[in-house]
Every structure is written in structure tokens, then in C-alpha cells.
Amino acid sequence: CVKARDCVEEATIVSDHQLIRKCDVEEVIRESKTQSRGCVMLLLTLVFLIAYAAVTYTHEEVVDGYLMQAPLRDRLSEGMEDLLTIEDIWTWMETVYVPTFFRQADMYGDQLNRSEWSRVLNYNQMQGAVRLLQVRSPRRNCSHDITAHMECFPQGEVSTETFGRPLDTIRIDLRSVSKSEDEGFAIRPPPGGAGDRRLRSLRPELSRYMPADGPRGDAFRFFLHRRSPREEIEKRVEYLRARRWLDEQTQSLTVQALLVNEAQGRPKMDKVEITFFFSRGGGIFSSVHFQAAFLERVSNMASVATDVIFLLVLSVF
Image (cartoon, rainbow, N blue to C red; front, side, top):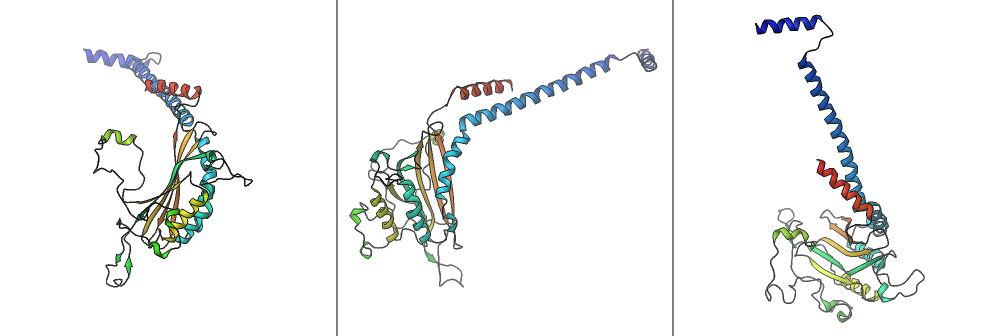
């Protein structure tokens, strides 16, 4: 009887175009709700993207970062495309890097106060010392029978052996440029190292908050101090050149410096890292990398407002 009644109702509805079944109405309502929910989610997604872009823009300050980094990148890139030999790198250090980072006179040739030394492009103050780090390959006879008479420098291996041209073969007074003939040419543990004192172990979860040390601990290090007179800086570079600090065994050379800028946007510290890669194919490849760290959390109230809006959008999701 029930089936018969349903059949009669369905036949009646089909014959009468003004009647609508309840289930069809419910289906239409469900589809309308689904479409409305999709429109709302699309709108919220657009709001989320806009809020995320605003937060990124106000916190990263991409424009200010570019205005600071682009001129320095152009300055340091002068002549980099023409670097083919070790001699070219020394020439670049003497003619581009040292004059840029160790500026001690103004544009008119007048000497600056000691507190104003090492102002890079007028507004960026260098902090600490410039670090030169070199990773070296071992020197050994080639393993192949055809090239057994040749010397090879495996790029996948690292050498920590002391090296350098003997001091009695160069005409430089060591006392005027370095405290020890091993500086930069030998890897020595620091005085009072781990064997002489107890060190607090670093918990794994805190390692990401520690500053990176750059290349591995098997890198040879040499420093150029910003408080040193320009003549001493040039002598230290010439000292490295005379003792052949860079040679066939060099794998990579990294030059690091820290700059502080307070004139362009939020105060920030930039790590400027230039790396030269010595290909065993005979060429030298280079890269210039900037890593910025802001010295203030927020720049203005607009930044705080974008943060609040972004958090509200996140709470909806």
C-alpha cells in the first residue's frame, strides 16, 4: 500500500508542474548552503593572502632591504665576472673589497675620525672584523694509471695541514702584520680550549637560536680588524699574498663582514658573505649573499595592526 501511495503521489507530481517534492527542496537547500560556504571560504582565503602579504611586507621590509643591499652588491660585483685566477682575486681584494670596507677618508680625501672608520657606502657601519676563511684540499698523486705522474687535489676531501711559504723567503716584517707566523696558515685550538675548561653543552632545541659559524671547523681563518689603520690592512693582505695563502689546494674562500644600518628603515644588521669556489676545471665561481637581522621587533603601529589582523584571520581558520 505504501509503495502504491508513493507511486500515485509521484505520478500526480509529474503530471502537475506546480507541485514540488520535499526531498528536491531539501537537496536545493543543501546545494545552496554548500555554494555559500564555498564563497565565504574563497573570501576568507583572499583575506588571508592579503594579510599574509601585508605582514611579510611590514616585517621583512623588502624595499628597505633592497635599497641597502643592491648598491653594495653592485659595488662588490665589480670585476667578479673577470675573475679567473688567484692573482685576480688578490687584485679584487686590493682594489674593490679593502677600499669599500676599510674606508678611513671622506670623498674629499680628509681623514675621518676613528669612530667613523669602515663606513660602507656612507651609511652602513661595519662591526667587528672581516673574516677570511679558506677550505683546502690535500695534495697527492693522481690515482689513475695514465695520470699517476700528475698531482691531484681531491675536492671531496679536506686538508688541515699547516702550509705557507717560509718567512725567510719574503721581504715582510712579520711583527708589523701578525703576532704569529701560524695565523691563517695553521688550525690551532684557542687558548684555554675545551681541554682546559668545562663548557656548557648545547641542547639540541636551542641550536637554531645560536649564530651559525659559517664554514666547518677545518677552515683556515684570518682576520682584518676595522680599527686597524688602512696601511696595516693593506700590509696584512700583502702578507697573505706573499706567503701564498691561496694556491692550487684551495677549495673555497669565504669573506664575511657584519654591517649595521639605522638610516634606511628599521635598524638592521646585515651579514655580507662573499664566497669564491675554485673549480678543478680551472675556473673560479663567486656568490654574494646577504642575511639580515632586525634590531627592533616592529617598525610602527601599522606593523602591529597587520599582525592583529593576521591573527584574527588565522583564528577563523
